[in-house]
Length: 67
Image (cartoon, rainbow, N blue to C red):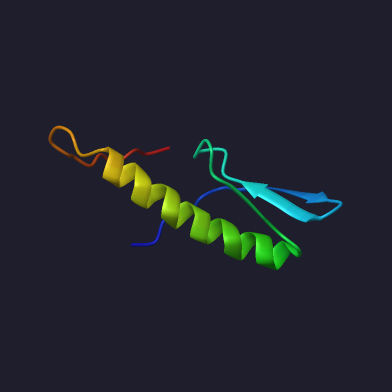
């Protein structure tokens, strides 16, 4: 399944800092913009895996939100 996330990217003295405003606590970084964007993809995958593991109580349902 493909899901798109909006990320914020800022050039820093050390390279690039990137985070996902819709996923609090999901930052990453990289020496180049390309590396930062690759790294945030992995951070998002890991974030979602942990979120799913933590959501083990109760019954799970999926909802669709239209904007």
